[in-house]
Image 1 (cartoon, one colour):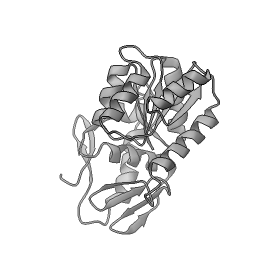
Image 2 (cartoon, helix red, strand yellow):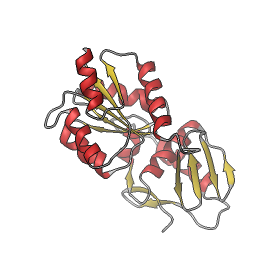
Image 3 (tube, one colour):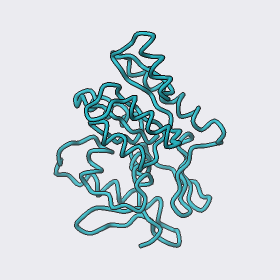
Image 4 (cartoon, one colour):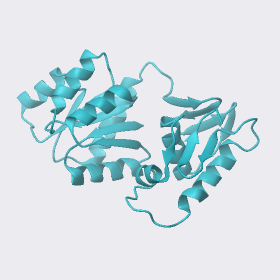
Length: 225
């Protein structure tokens, strides 16, 4: 899943990003309500995880603005406010689920899975595609031109990140932070090695390459060279 986390507590956000990434999800993080609203309105996400108490704009305000814009992306509200009236207010504002802090991470994962299924209950799969390359996020199945491509977990996570950012230049720093959860440069060729392996699987033997190197900047997944 592609998840937007709106959380101003940086240590709590780092914990969630790490856990969700380790479970195969792609996570974008916003540290205040205004950035969170902007990202939710301008990018497509499978699920939003929104803290209730945020600087700049509170979580319920974000949800109301999204619903007013006819954005139906499922929202899980996180909050230390756990009284019945608090939960009812959150759900009436447009939230789909409400989880009180502190919480068990496994419960959060289960709730996110349930929200994703609910948000796509009329679809046979949740899929991403670039040209003839397709990724089924529920089945973890990759095909190109109808041919099944078998990827290792890290390769799958890397491909999902590229597909969520198709047509955009992805920098090495973005890959280190979002795919490997490194917030420093380990000074290794880990990215080059994984990119090479992924490229050999999704491009080799097909009529045109999709994964391109942008010299001096990073990489781009695009059907146009």
